[in-house]
Image (cartoon, rainbow, N blue to C red; front, side, top):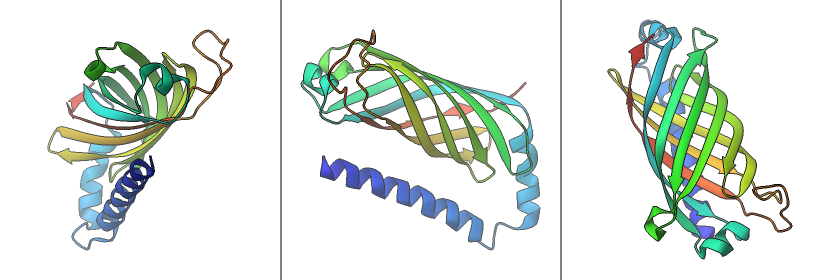
Length: 189
């Protein structure tokens, strides 16, 4: 567990350092920032596959699965709103299936609202419905762009709760830490 937390901390640090490096890099001139602005504030819809893994802390979910690590596979739909020169608003819907490596079908759906800056750093939060009940998901990440191709890398956290699927849980579900990667192509509305 300690190794997982250290790995996640290092990943977040690398993402933050990369964002700071992009900002302070003299190659990124004001002209280049202005060239990026139209691509960030143009309304677009993005959709694409997501693949990753989730680390489960001790709780009802890890006990029932007899595992502390599960794979994730799914699809994400994203729309932009609240156009700005350096920041845009995001609405994301993410549908995932977990536990395939154990022969399990553990679906989840999340609806997130957040922001992304022109450098690709993003933050979002919203509800998550899964086999362990209704919870809140917090996500941070970075979206790398290569032409019209977007390569998102996200870290998500769902805190433990006692709700259970039908609100009758009496044992903590355990927290979930996820790392997800994917891709999508930019398409104008």
